[in-house]
Amino acid sequence: MCGIAGLIHRGRTSDIGEEMTKMLQALKHRGPDSTGYALYGTSGGDGKYVLRFKVAEQEELRHGFKIRELIKERRQEVDHRLQELDAKIIEAVNATGYANKYVISYTGDLKKLVDYLEDIEGVELLSIGHGLELIKDLGDAKTVSDQYKLLGFRGTHALGHTRMATESDVDIRSAHPYWAYPFSDVSVVHNGQLTNYWNNRRDLERRGRRFMSNCDSELIAVYLADRMDAGDTLEDAMRRSIDELDGVFTYLVATSDSLGMAKDTMAAKPMVLYEGKDFIALASEEVAIRSIFPDEIDTFDPYEGEVRVWRN
Amino acid sequence: MAELKKANVQGMHGEQLLGRTQQRFFDVARDADAYVYPWAYEVDFNKRAEFDAKDMDTRAINLQIRKLMSEGNGTIVVHNPGAKHSLGVGILNRLKLYFEGSLGYFGCGLIDGPNVHIKGRVGWSCAENMLAGTVVIEKNAGSCFGAAIRGGDLVCKGDVGARTGIDQKGGTIIVGGRTGAFSGFMMQRGRMIVLGDAGANLGDSMYDGTIYVGGKIASLGVDAVEAEMTDLDVAWLTRKLKAYEIDPPKDPKKMTKIVAGKQLWNYDNLEPTEKKLVL
Image (tube, rainbow over all chains, first blue to last red):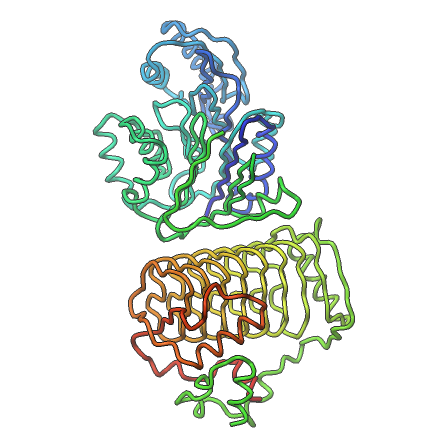
């Protein structure tokens, strides 16, 4: 059934790593297979991008032959290709052996950089952005947070997801959130099923968009980014998605400065919203919001076909 | 006639006791024992207990409520329920139960008799399959509010989500604010009052029952039609709302009444709550 959560602070930063970890841990029962974060921090900006990429799946470490040599080779190839494209590595953090965070300065074509890096066999870009850092791995929120040292991560807004795998594999590739290739800073988490996935995917692929997984949730990220690339505002793109995406869904989307939510016309998937003056929190269940607000607060369910967008 | 009078005092329409088939399925002398739970607790409303549920899980909270009932406590106050799921479920005896906060999913489901007051909000499927008693929520509620209830009064003073009273088989649902799409979907009996607006497809595929709406209706579902408000409707609405200290946003006479366009007689049998009333 999956659990999704989002939060955004207005006009300030906070320890969004800790806040989102608490929310996702409270939603653990909705999906124990994997946990993912889209955190909007302060590492990038001023021509700097933050790259999150993996060079292997967690599973390969346990069963693959010579996987450690392969990981080393793949990372060296990433470094080499960044150098070729005049991208300067400012900071490199190896979070788990197979997952990496690079802060780079780069002024060239983003799509070219992404395509060139993903051309390396076994390398997948999880995210690229001035603020966005996408972290996802197998296990519950506490496991992933400890593994990637997310407590203390300061930022303005975040999305999170706990996944119960129903239609694709239990691996990092199928875990949420999804980043909208090749657009920086756009991420999506989703609870539900899209029934016109292949029609939309084929249409987007014909127009040059690429998909890394067979998960229907990835379509929402790519669809929204495609619409925004065509000139729609985030809110316009989301409103259009209510009509054009078929199925039952509630999704959250984040960009460099905004957080949005949309619910299908059947309102078949849950979402609870707390809207304060300086802070907005959303989750599949109120218990997640309660994990960061122990005191009594007013919450409500957004309605069918509803779209909302908040800026930080 | 005594039953009719008793029903009116309880806020029910007389016609609920005048179905065509109940004589065939219900016999007072034969069925009386079937409506008493041998394991229900004898409690005293004047005996009061309270506890803090902050660090307790669902199972521990429900077991604590049961323990307090077994000790004869008729008034129980639960502090810090923390929006946990499935709290206050399966209570089959009279009891005054107060939740000083919010509940998660399936709160107060499968109850038969208690009077529950919830200070905060409730998640999806509150009071699902309730047979009798009252549940009053001070703030908002999630979707599937009162799904398949068969009796009792379920009251939310704020807004509720989609599919309110889906498969409702009896009882009364009162919504102080707005309700979402597909409310009253496949409703079979009972009454629903919505003082605010109602979402799309109200009363879709309803078999029977009545929905009163104070605000705008986005659209009616299949088989749902508008009906004429009678003096009996107005009297009942006034009495029900007064009982829960809810001020209607407008004159009950001006509310819209929605009923099923088709009548299916096989839903005429008395519901358990009504049988208890007769007993």
